[in-house]
Length: 262
Length: 239
View 1 (cartoon, chains in turn green, yellow):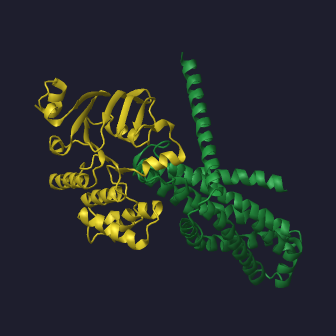
View 2: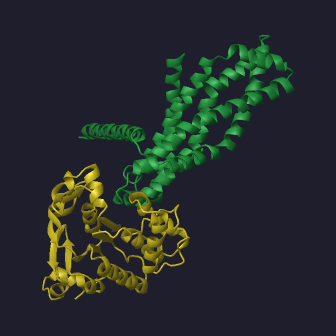
């Protein structure tokens, strides 16, 4: 009987996991549908662009510049072993534009804005504000979910671009000003080796990360209570799960995108 | 106007509603009473279309809620107001913006007309001067009154009240009940009030429905209820 209990438990957990994945998938499909079919609440979109984009710019500036500076140090000492320190510029540029810029920006936005969005929508769920919206004959997706998706699609690539630029400048500060690589060499070689395809790869990644962040954080908030339990503990669980799941999905999806675009 | 037919609802095997049936006529106000966790709020949410029954039907003006979709459901909800137990005010909007919200989103009224209507509603619920405050800055009683103003601002035909006086002191609770009564006299809505305010609520309603162990134990006028010899009713009323 004990063996049967274990099998039953595994079955129940598997079924519940599949149910939740299905729910998440349907949520994404509905979100896209309401994004494509007007009306769009542009006022809410602007507000969320300010929240997700503008208010994340300081943390992006800080992480971007320090990431670039670390790349400058590590890149120089690695390349100089092979007498290739002249390639510091393209190394920093390619690493940031193709990989570190999109991934680290997305992770910063997840931690800062994704968690806040999940918490806000979660609190609205447990205090019946979402029910109130529905009972006014209004569609909660148009007010809460779609604006976050559009704001993330606009903000995350722009934040990634800022991250790349300050990161490249951080690499310049260390590589050129501190370690003596020629400024013309740094930028000249970067211009020679960084191509439009590399920039587009970073753009596609950041766009898809924007979708992931909006999707996971709004889903977790929207289904607070239903999937995580009610009350403050439910909101806390939803927020934590949003950040963890989003971070993992960003890294996993990054692998698939890299192998696809390689 | 409202018909509930053989309504059944369970959560994780626990039966909450076990074959509830009743009718409410146009313009009537009905109290829904029963023990805590007895299914009163669940029943109310079925009437609002927020939950779907496992079995049975809710029919409003001939329309079965289970069959309504999209535009039809929205059209029904345009005629309905709901006062949530906690108020459910949007906490990032001021009191004024909360009450104006359904007018801005669902009507073509000009901002000047909206302002007039909102300020009038706030005055009627005794919140003149509080329009620029946020929900976190006002008391529980004021939150309920603001939520009531928001629920009534479009003059709904049907009003559902989920424990409108719970958590409030007796004086404020009495004021809320009198407000509901005054609003009913003004716009003649059909109303259902989930409440524990017994026997105070009896002065304000036409009928009383009592849910006990998932079933409808009583469907009577307040006078008939007070004369009931049913031991469960007598025990619940404290006689």
